[in-house]
Amino acid sequence: MGRSPVTHEEAERWIRRAHYRPFFSLRVLRAQWHFIRRDPAGYFQVWAEVLRGTWGSANFFLGAIAIFPKTVLFAYEMLNLGITHVHAHFANHPAVAALIIHRLTGIPFSFTARGTDIQVDQHMLREKLTPRNAPSPCLPYNKQIIVDACGPGVREKVHVIYGGVDVDLLSPDPSRSAGPFQILCIARFEEVKGHAYLVEACRLLRERGVAFECRLLGNGPLFPVVEKQVTNAGLCNEVQLLGPRTYQEVVCELQRADTVVLPTAPTASGKCEGIPNVLKEAMACGLPVIASAVVVFPNWWMTVARVFWCLRRMRPLSQMPCSASVKMRPCGVNLDGPAGEGSAGLQSKNQYGEAR
Image (cartoon, rainbow, N blue to C red; front, top):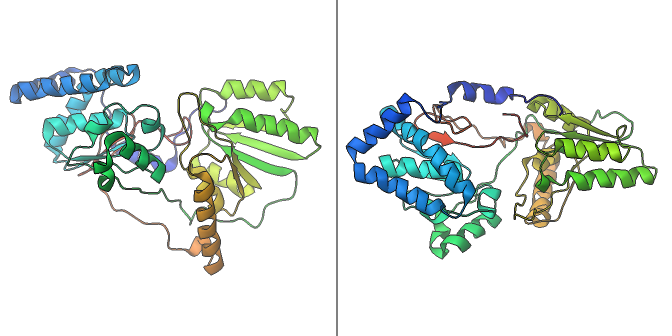
């Protein structure tokens, strides 16, 4: 099933500083007792609020039961560490954890709404919009989902923050070698990414006599399904499934490619693509991108393409002062991922499939 999971070099220092806690331990029990002794009514009110708010969604309800005890331990440790703000990546389980911490300690929190975490299931979304926090969706489409679900009164609290790319690392490579047309797809193997459509397109290209090579990077639950589709279509020579790669390997793949493709498609459950970083990274490398016309893609990609074109006209991308450095002293907390010091982060998924 491709290569084994990889750890990105850039993430290692954050992983070393992250706080990992088991779902159940003696320390977890002691943390419960601390808050029960301090404010028994408050502790059980938080339990009631979370169970009531997640009722009706098996994913949210069972997830809340699972993370509540260890989240109480994180709350206890944050008080001792002097944490003054918690930021949760994703509006589902991480934001529920941040809400629990806020209710128990009063520490304000914010969260990032990235896409499917609000598009598919919006349980407790209104409760997370307390007066002392502000969500930060990655695109206006997600902001509108939040406003539609929670009312126009939250519009001013929701801030759209676009993710950037490292233009010093990602730049056009004029030394691409000759050979078959190079198609690249970098995505987790799941339904919303649309790998099946790309493989079918590759079959049609071969039928029409086009010489090409298609390289698929990433891992995920549908990896064996796509692998079987490639084999059944007789495309083993043209389509290569390379599994997860380190970020430096991803950059090398971008620099050897002729185009990057992401045939994303909304799923029956409502899962939909937002603004994939990989397409921004491809355009930073001067590559044409091929993507499905869903949600924000058409207008947004034209805007991004114009920006990169203007930047390249003014000066080489590698010389543009576009990347910002934010000084943080990491410490943090983990449901599954890294965090920071003085400000804690909660995260539940990673970017390149199984890689962290």
